[in-house]
Image 1 (cartoon, one colour):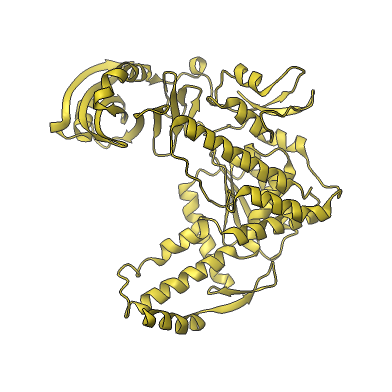
Image 2: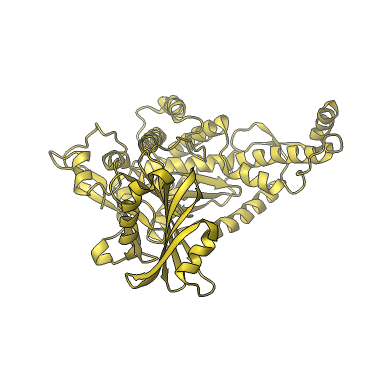
Length: 484
C-alpha cells in the first residue's frame, strides 16, 4: 500500500501543470492544453449529435436560444471562444456544457422558465462551466488517477486500468461538477447576466422552479409506490437546491434594485405551441392514454395505472401494486409470425399457451407465460404481439402468480385498446398554449378543463410551469402558460 502512495506522489508533479483560470484568476491543476480541450469538445459534439434529438438550427426556438446565449456570452470570460447553443428536443429538466463552448439545454427545462432573463441565467451558468474550465479540471484529475493506476499496478494490480480513460472522461464531462463548481457557475452566471443587462435575480427564480419540480417528482414517485432516487446532473439539484437558492440570493443582494431586462412576453411567444413533454417522434402520455403519432399507434390504461415514457420503452404499473406493463417495438429484419416472436421472447418450457388472431387489421398473438419478471420473481406474464409491416409491438404485462386472475381483465382491456393512431379521433400530444388568467380561475380548474391530461398532479404541474405554487394565483389579465 505504501508503494502505491509513494508512486502517486512522485507521479503527480511530473504530470501536472498549473494554468491560470480565465474566469477566476486562480491557478488550476490541469493536464490539458486549450487545443486539446477544443478537440475533445468537437469529438463529444459529434457523438451527441448522433445520440440526442437536437432541434434543427433553423428552428425558431433554437434560433431564439442561440440569440440569447450569444448575448450573454458576449460578456463572458474567454472572449476568443465561439460559443454554440443547441436545444435537445425532449422533456428532460436539464442543461449541460462540454469543452470548447458547446452548450445544450433541454426543451423540458426551457418550458418551465417564465422569462428571457431565466433562460439567460441558465445559459450563463453553463457558460460559467466552460469559462472556468470545470470539465477540463475533472478530466485532468481523472487522467492523473488513470495514469497513476496504470503505473502503480506494478505494485497493486489494476486489471481494468487500461482502456478506462475514455469512460472516465465521459463521466467527468456529463455527470455534474460538485458543490463548489456549481456555486461558482451560479456566481459567474449572475455576473454575466448583469453585464448583459438582464435581471440578476433570474437565477433565484429558475432555482426555485427546479426545487418545485423536484418536489412534484418526489410526490409522483411516492404516490406510485416507486423508490425515490435523486438525479444529480448538470444544473440539477447538486448541491441541493435550497442551499443554492440562498447562495444566489446572497450573490444578487448587492444588486438589489438594479433594473434589468426580463422580456417575459418575448419568451412566452417563443415557447408557444411547442410540445410540453415528449415530441411526436417520441410519443406522449396524455392522461391515461399513450399517443405515438410518429409510429402511428395509441393505447389506453384503466384508472390507477401510472404511465412512464422513456426512449427504451413505455412502462406502467398499478399504483402501489406489484403489477406492471411494458411496451417495446422491434424493427424486424425478416418475416416472423406473432407467435414466433412470443416463442423467441420466452423459452418453450415456460409458455403455457399461445393464441393467434387478427386485431384492428394487424396479425396478433397472445401468450400466457409462467416465469420470473422484473421486480416479481414468481410472476405470471400476459404477452401480446401485434405486427404492422416490419414492426413488431410487444405488450408485456405481469403480476405475482397468485394475484394474476385479479388483474387479467385489466390486462385484456389494455391490449384491446391497442390500435392505429388517428389524429382526428385521438387528438395531438400535449403542447404549450398561452392563456389569459380570468377572475375565478384556479390551477385546479385549468387542470380539470384539460381533463387532467398530465396525470394526477396536473394542477401542480401547470402551476410549476408558471413558476408558482398551487396556492399562488396570477393577477387577472396576466398571460400564463397552459397545456392542451
